[in-house]
Image: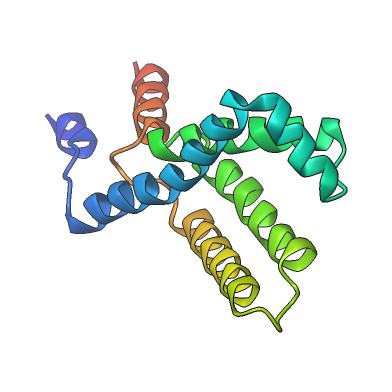
Length: 145
């Protein structure tokens, strides 16, 4: 009986907020990754004009799709958030530095804000409504059996 009480999953508002926050953060990367992958040749050309090599462009698409999906599902959330947080920070610092343009400044600030959200997700973790927690509970159950 004691084990059943410990393993009970109580979902609270914080877990719901983490779930919705993860989904909202991931949508940006999933949509962009799908768009880039769907128009692969055009994406490579556009990135080449910005000085981004084909291998880096491909890695960018894979990161957006893989880490975006991982965050949405709550799978290896901290690692995925670290990757996307670093990606957004580098994107801001490398590509959006023309502060004379209000649009560029806005993109710079947006990328910094998303990066901050990802770094906060590293600290918070995915919450109870995640594959991370499901896997953790599965292994805890197997180890105690």
